[in-house]
Image: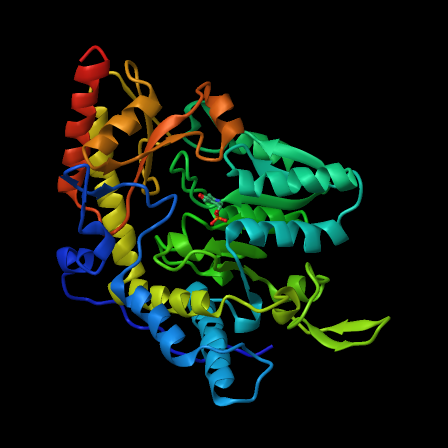
Length: 422
Ligand code: PLP
């Protein structure tokens, strides 16, 4: 296992010019339906700055060939770029080694891989997986598949009414030595709840369970230190942190990775193959069968550099201030119910109006250039628990401004005058 040596860029200490940063995002500079675009759907997918787009273009124009197998110059360059991205990701998440970073297509594939290759080979019938009631389908359905296949029991860690937090008394009751995996979302994409993952992982360890944190909504929004978090697995998606689609991955603690068999077979992941026997490479390559997404890794590397040049603490502060502003403005309106915590939360606001249905609202505000999302946000069981079919959701990132929140509030007011009682 090799250790990380590259240096992390220092965050800027001077005041940040958020307007200049916003101008790095070409896609934001356009009109939608005759109105300047307000993009409030970053929880689904963030936008990419010029720097990331150019890095991908440069890679294809100058350096592309297949990795690992070649000894010619271009293949070497592509290999250096791909493996360099792994070192960068290890730094970004502060893993002990770059060998603990596995690239996949994103959070969904990462969780499927871990559920199958770790839990699918270590758990036995009757073992329990403890999982919260606020999970995205991608941290629920893979466990349901495993449960169907192996007779593993899924135990659900309840949330409080209204979804403001997890029920810790229930956790104390449910966390027994029968639990072999504890898994939770770090920041809920539907509620904005920020779960205390360090404490959750610590408690999991106490009963000998492995912990998996779904980091899809946290990886690009705050400083992540997997060693301090104490998790066994932490998953992320590049497209939610200003990187390309189709690339992401997970951190896996070395002892866990080493104990896992391959997930898929093919090229790149083998040591030696005969007609009847095969030996596998060590992690992380053992889990990366086939030609990897090199251009994606290059873009991911550029995205991580970009976020660190701003400073992830500064991004988190910006997110928090903007979300607070939006929360206050929205809750000043009559007949609005906001789901999730009233205090600290991720950059996500799920809400309903008492007189306009969520889909009508989202469709209407789009006509005013405001991109919200309506529906169940891939958390159908959570919506049922909240007693609603879905919500409208505004989600923010560092390129958003308070003036855009004002535009959203204005558009919601218009929708109410048109459809509702306002
Ligand atoms: N987990 C959470 C909390 C998410 O918000 C999402 C995507 O919205 C995912 C998992 C799935 O991510 P991906 O579609 O990139 O695999």
